[in-house]
Image (cartoon, rainbow, N blue to C red):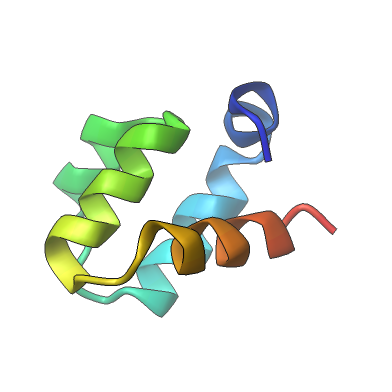
Length: 63
């Protein structure tokens, strides 16, 4: 998923991310606000998952 796709599907991605990674706060998601790289970094920071596994999950939302 590229930056434009992320912005277009932000509401969906945001909701799914909160379900999958419960430690993400509303403030985290406001800070990220559709920025792909910031979202990857925030999830890594909170949960310690690899960037590759996070990218794979986000890209699966694009189908």
